[in-house]
Image 1 (cartoon, helix red, strand yellow):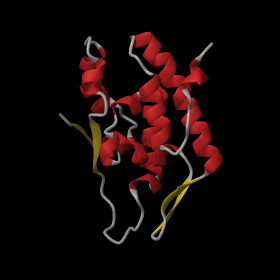
Image 2: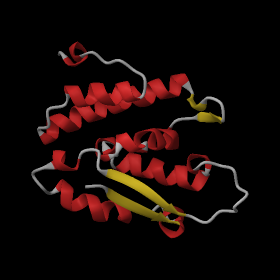
Image 3: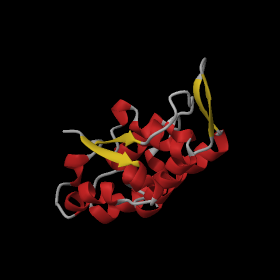
Length: 156
């Protein structure tokens, strides 16, 4: 089951997270968070000139909305549909990058490393809080973004 969150110009311009909250709040109060793992995707209803060549992540208002989302729900990456590119798009909203027609998206390496490690710590703590087994999930997350995190990293 895929859950599509439609973002309108109004919600983006007002930094309104209610489109996410409406879907996420019932899930967060359930006992089966893992049933919704990698199920969320975003759809944009945001007007722009047809000649505007920018990707969604290059529009400042949209990036700001995602910064707000990530501040309120820093573990939201758990719910993103990684298989359909949502993790890459979400990352592009938060990490400086450049687009190249030949090479695709190129993230700033240092910024991407900080983003990945921050998410590793956030997910690790959130998984413990929610009693979700997480090493494999965290390792998969980091691999999706080109980083290797060994399970021994989590040994205290």
